[in-house]
Length: 614
Image 1 (cartoon, helix red, strand yellow):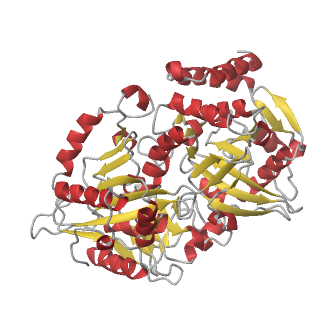
Image 2 (cartoon, one colour; image 1 turned 90 degrees about the vertical axis):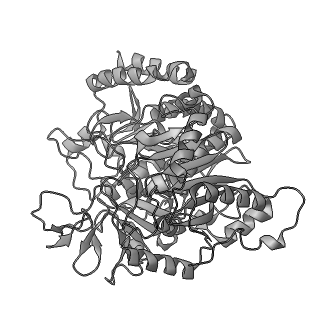
Image 3 (cartoon, one colour; image 1 turned 30 degrees about the vertical axis):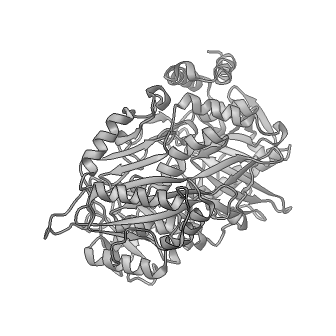
């Protein structure tokens, strides 16, 4: 593709006495090249021509399949190794200097020991491959404090995907040099070196995997996986795990949240963020098409939110990503038409979806009826009577965010927007009602600290087990979870109490007395959002319950909605017996925090005990 280079483009133009960002970058790249011994080094410029050449090479290698259907222009399908299909939380490490700083939610290894291990596995790991150098920035390039990174990788699939998910290339490199800015070094290898003459495989990876973070030095090292957040290091690794540690030290919050702009028929707009575990409806809510007349929704992002105290005492939010890496199954024309319209514009990479006979892709939930014949994600013939899904349950679409028809203009604001409300939500069949407002800010942090959900295919392990997932950040907190909750308390102290966002707990997945869904969900969740807005505005009826403020049945606008009084009751009910059992589980969960659990959260727990009568 290009000749091997020993320095970045334009290095001959830089003449300074002190070490510069550019020189630090050259040293970083040189050190990694010396360790991993790639055949070539390519500095990614982010251009259309480069992307075209990369994808051509990936098609030739069998890694990508070019889609020929006019429904998916300039798009590709990829199929991973069956053992490389999700985040590998068991192989994800926070290597802080002190074990206590990693906390009980993370896997910790002494950093010296881990560096020795990484030196061993990365030794010659890129042999026979090209090492790509990707300068990238999380968030707007013209932000007051842009957050830069440089990922080196031996995966062209990663380069192509990072081009969708982040702002990359020469413009980023120039801005980084201009500001003499700090950058997060991120090293990735699929761990599959090639001997001379050895034939490559379409999806190289290694059974041995390490996704490693050094929070003090802000480094990321990932080995063995070519999939998703394990390999696209600007995503969960940087934007959440490392960024959460940066945010702790700098006084802001890096969160696993969507950002939605909701405008009422009266023309009043509000910005709402929502924290949900993966595959629990973040993308569907971020791209909601309200069913209520006169209400409009626009999106600013579906997965990651950075929250900063503003100059006027408010919280301001920005989405640091440039694309969607969304769970495909469950995303369809009848559930999330806005996502499908963005996808239909093309320029996407689909991973582990099924291939249609006309050169497109399909996944469960895309259409109400499946095609009569497909090639499944493992290359096998598939028909609707098969006893297995056609797409992997964690199949993904990687699509540019600027293809979204409903993208809010404020997405491009370098200073972000004022945050009006936060939703915490998970997937629970029982116990947690459709929507509950917290009594105050600390009670809202308690909602986040006790957030629970049934596990999905987005992470390895058993599906359907209930686990606590504080702020939907369980796999992503880059330091001790108790310190993280304390940081939420401290950061709120920087805001004007009158301007703090209201906090709500939601559960679209509550079951009714017959075992079916009590609430229709999807676009009908706009009815819940309307009540949230009414509460922001100081109106909207609510009743006091042991766990917070829930709407009366009459307070939810059910105009035109086919829902029975029994289902609505089941969606909103707070059952004391269920919450007595829930309290016992919460107490076991909090016991794991030890002394780092904030006193304010302990006080909220005692108040809940008193209200439930446990």
